[in-house]
Image 1 (cartoon, helix red, strand yellow):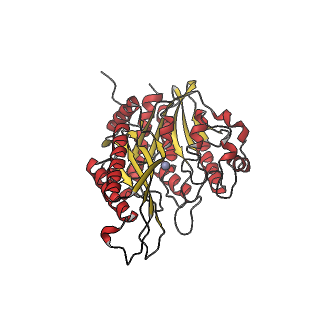
Image 2 (cartoon, helix red, strand yellow; image 1 turned 45 degrees about the horizontal axis):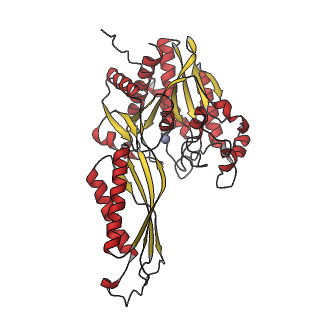
Image 3 (cartoon, rainbow, N blue to C red; image 1 turned 90 degrees about the vertical axis):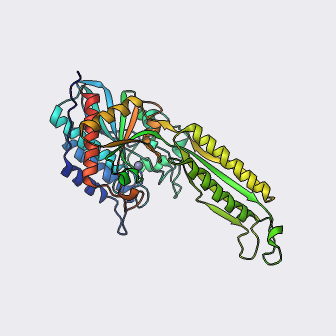
Length: 415
Ligand SMILES: [Zn+2]
């Protein structure tokens, strides 16, 4: 017989206060938050978090790149269970993306401290720096610092729109860039990240919690279709080598192939460039982007091959030239199975409904998971709105998620 799991209820009004107050830092008059890494708003938000952490009785410290930690010291203070998410936002982002994972971690640690006292292993909540690439294209900068994945050359090479290097931005924020290696951690046993879903599956299906199985893999392709520019009035339809007509047919076929595959496969053709781009000239060249995602590596590859083959066939039928280039990719990342099972047990103990699902968006967890046991739980986003001021999660859903997180952390840190 195993003991029944004790639900660790977080304080919902405190969570609401934190969410609203943090959202006011960097809030813009037109709606939405601007809080890029190392900016004054980011520093102010971090200062506020540090105050809340201190008031909660946590030991507060920052590392060399600016990740902020609140530590609940364990009886064994040599090993650490980490939870949290990112503090930076996209331009005009919402109140919940990233922020909720930090604040849920904070109220979870408060509840654990109050109900269970000091943990066996230390527990920490972290506000990670730079997830959204909204100032520097630094791809999980804070997480990479913790894992020792930052290369020295990146300190000068990564630059924002004003051509300020990430090293200068760090110095301006009072952080020592040359000490970035001091941020490396070797004491972490697990990372749990709570995040809003940023999609509408949980919302539509009225499910409380998403247990992330894998973070989706992604392939970016640039397709170039070449035909011939001709007079729009004198060239009969059957004699044209119209690059856009070919590319348009490809777009329809790509969409059909991915729809046929079904959820969770997604494809987006978001960038188009038509040349010469004149109203009375048959288009000679079209370039368009493909963003293809699937959480299973084999399926992603199969879809990519099928898409390229179909585009090639269309090009041949229409006497067009086709070239495709892979411009970016990231492999799918599985979440730790034992931690997924632990989250499911915690959800059950809290009376929450749950569903196993992939994450269609990238997260710090995908980098963490390559180096330490990592899992994620999602809470619903109203109508799936995200990366926008319209982002919203009801307090009941947010607090339930934080309660599941606290309960899962209790299973890890109070064995
Ligand atoms: Zn996020």
